[in-house]
Length: 48
Image 1 (cartoon, rainbow, N blue to C red):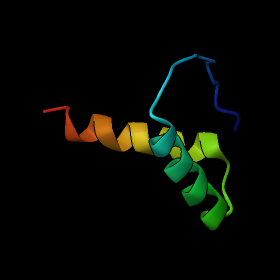
Image 2 (spheres, one colour):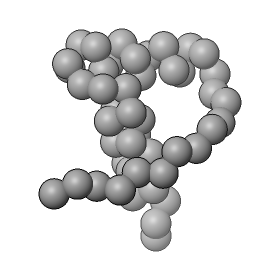
Image 3 (cartoon, one colour):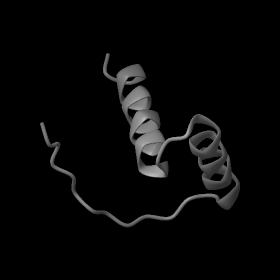
Image 4 (cartoon, rainbow, N blue to C red):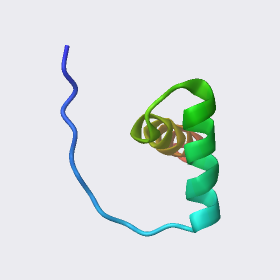
């Protein structure tokens, strides 16, 4: 099954992005996958 993706552009602290890239590399994952997980977890915490 293919998931639809939407491109977007934003800016973030370079240190935060570097940490996300390190996690992605360490786990053998794509950066966008780690970023998507981080966004999902943030939203879960704020849904109540």
